[in-house]
Length: 234
Length: 73
Image (cartoon, rainbow over all chains, first blue to last red; front, side, top):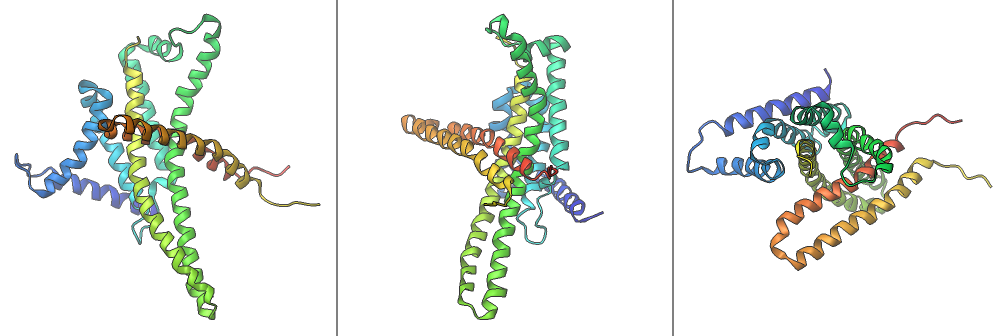
């Protein structure tokens, strides 16, 4: 039981509490809290899920995609909260699990829709390709679809959070060094600490934006992969 | 002359040249398209962010490789 696990459990409890309070007394004419809640969930539902997957499949996969979006967003945001400054998606375990779940879901959706062999035939053999190139292209598509997709999903999320964390560490450590070591010795060069502090603030805002963006990208990529698996061939 | 240093940051720096050019092309073309048809701005902005995330995926794989401690020969 270390700090990272406590932070993750705290975030999950907070998300459950937020959703329970948000869906408790729904009125037809919403109050302000309900408007804010509906804004976020409406955005995820309409722009991400229904837009990519259509009505029927959208409703089928909505719980999974909602979970992925809000879990990623919540865990990313802990990277900038002072006190808990580690983004739990910056450690490779959590993104691996989310990417494996997304992988299993899109392969399962494709196999259930088309049948086992027709699904692989649809994914690997593209229409309109000369027969000579088909083995080479099938190998390339297999690599790209079944091996690289989960790897890139994991690494994109992890490395975004790791890189952001390291930038923030750099800026704030530099500020501490300039203020407490250099300036304390009377060297006026320590006023550069003001510059690095401003950079620290700017990078914190950038981290906020990147946290939301990475949650959006993970969700919409999973939705697009499911759509590619389930779509009929031309 | 003996030059000593670390190769991983240099390799990462070379790897992101292509990504930087790619992101520039995507954003430039989105701005151009919005200038031609301003009512599509919402939709094109979503597609732009998706394109940026896919193009930068290889940068992030490169920095992950830069952290792997390969054994010295």
